[in-house]
Image 1 (cartoon, rainbow, N blue to C red):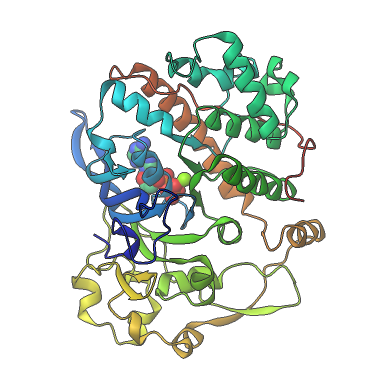
Image 2: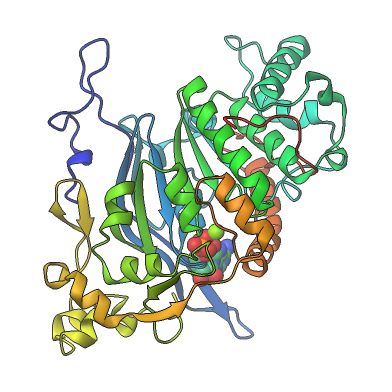
Length: 438
Ligand code: ADP
Ligand code: MG
């Protein structure tokens, strides 16, 4: 468990609500574990587990944007989806507003599902092509209809759908259209409208801009920030793109192979990362100016398999600090706890205190900056430092997500203990309707 000040119900200096009560975290995740069993052979015997999320703890305050960053496959999506019960957890505990999310069933679970929504990366795969936008956005409302919200009535629903389209910068009359009539950015706006229609408290944004053109990424990020203010939202924002995370987050958690290795305020983390992995990761942020040469720590080897993670510190097989320190035994033998090293800054490294800027410099090679195209540079500067992402990795991930979101939609519909909002929804097409915050 993390020994974080944010985890106390009423940390010193916590924001105090109007009624005088100190606000605890909205979302509290303790020792969350999610393993996927691996089956094989003719008898489909269980051969092992993919340890996708392994003992992860953190908390998110109301109104906060908590960014989760890490390489593809490190468990970010699994973490987000397990929290909102799209996947059953293997272990651990999640509390929303002090209530145990995993203990809910039946109508209580249904109520919780409304409060925790998700926006997927791929707007195309998560929008049912045969449904008009009104039904896509209204679908979850039908599932969640009760006497109080009146969502069972078509007119009430249509009003809310129109309001949501308005809120995300689309025309109200788009409600009659179908997903194929929209651009990528517009489809993502529909996906956002779909999530917000249910008036959630927290939204898991799982790579919501990774599949979009760089020029549209900033519009969607600014829209999300505007909506947070307008609807008093809290985000768990998942991305592998460090610049996107820096732009949108208040606090950031860095993940490596199923574990969070560092948590800090965004400015603190980017100015002064304290985990050898975070330092290497941040050193790899492309420099938009191709003339600039920067120091970069290139990690040796590939990310190990989460089915057989290294002992002790999972990062030890690739750790440059361990090499510098002459391979201390602790790295291989003891799992480092995520511990507070200064106010609001947590690190899971036995030797974080020995990590000096000089040590990092020594580990770095000077490499030419990644060259960006002229277009990218323009787009980049226009969105205050958001860099282009690896298109190939993104599209592979998007394809995997189409499958995932369909499975999830089916799983939710089949679930007998209270149905959540059905299939994920997202739009596609050019994105010219609104430039939030621009
Ligand atoms: P990220 O979102 O950081 O890219 P994921 O959470 O998608 O990472 O995946 C973490 C690990 O879990 C990966 O090794 C991935 O292959 C595995 N994984 C993800 N979903 C499943 C699943 N449904 N079944 C089995 N393994 C999965
Ligand atoms: Mg993912």
